[in-house]
Amino acid sequence: MSTTNEPPLPAAIEMILPARDKDLGSLVVGRVLPFPRRRHLGPFVFFDHIGPTVFAPGGGMDVRPHPHIGLATMTYLFDGAILHRDSLGSEQAILPGAVNWMTAGRGIVHSERVRPEDRASGFPLHGIQVWIALPLEQEEAEPEFTHYPADSFARYDAPGVRARVIVGTAFGLTSPVRTASPLFYVEVHLERGATLELPSSDVARGGYEERGAYVLSGSVAVEDHDVTARHLAVL
Image 1: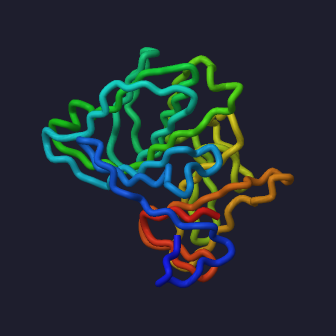
Image 2: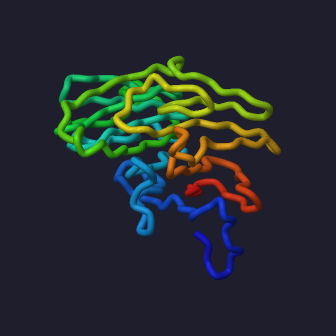
Image 3: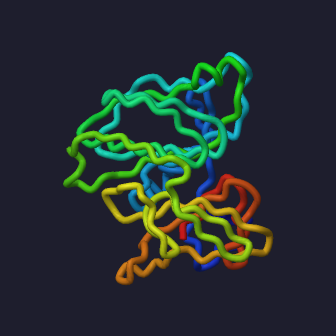
């Protein structure tokens, strides 16, 4: 968001939210949502930027078993690996470009840890984890876990643009990830000078009422305003 010392935001940007450091014990993440003035963005109620970091041999992330209810979670990595285990008996390592989609529903317990081989050698880690609210009528659904390999997702290419539709529908493409409500989650790489128009905000024509763009690295211009790394522009 702007301050009194900054120029006003263009009409296309409602606000800009920074990633704030949150110490999880074995790992510091950049927490974007929830934010005091913005508790959610569409169904996205939680957004953590993991890393980028490099663990020395013997170190790593250890999120002990903990419960979830009434929502879905997704982990998406750009580098490294995380081993997921849950109370359904699932055990699945997630690698860059793949998706671990966990629907908690009426309740599930899971842990997220370093693979033993990675802990022994040391490894990098970089990714995003989101929590997504379930519609009220599905909050008590049976828990479920589904893994989607990296080659499951459709690609969108345009001059200077490389994108993958990870969840939902965008750019005329639909992800195989099964969701409980309309949403889109897209990984985008832009070359300098390239432009990209996000899916429409016209709900009546299949668009999305609330949209956002999180900048992992570099900067992106929205109209005449630069949105820098580790900031989410609410559009």
